[in-house]
Length: 224
Image (tube, rainbow, N blue to C red; front, side):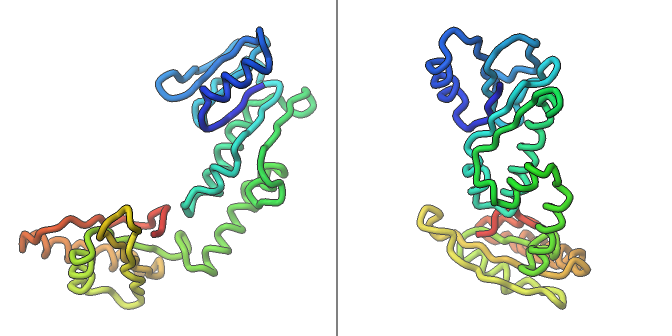
């Protein structure tokens, strides 16, 4: 049996108390284990640090699904599904007695994709939704982040290509002090023109040795 969790060490301690005398393996971070032999054991691993098991795992419990799905990122669902599929692939096949248990709402699209072992349909659905919402990869988005005055000045001096849409800038929150973020959205056909416009504006700003730092990201996973 193996569990993929955030806070692997704490979970391992809880499992050790629940199954006294059972051999325990913890894999994650600097203490990542690459493989385990085919002997009875509980393996607790963080996502991406799952060791290979000789003959495959008898069972896998994928914990804290809500943590992965609740991340403020456009890639939250696809990243969660990718990790779940990678973990489940290490388990012995169903005919051989392998079992995978996901601790998450079974009605969620990502959970359904795992249950049906159908990442393709999930990807097609995600793309269709992003086309309606005009999110990447249906369009290209450039995020300009930095102090409010600097970002506003940079955006005002940037000659945006035809079809580009400026959203914001808006404040990033109290913890970010005066930092703001502006989003520039453009059809995929205009991505090179947008990149050239941003590059030219940055070059002009550098030549003038203007104060203040800005960060430009193309298709950021986190939007504001």
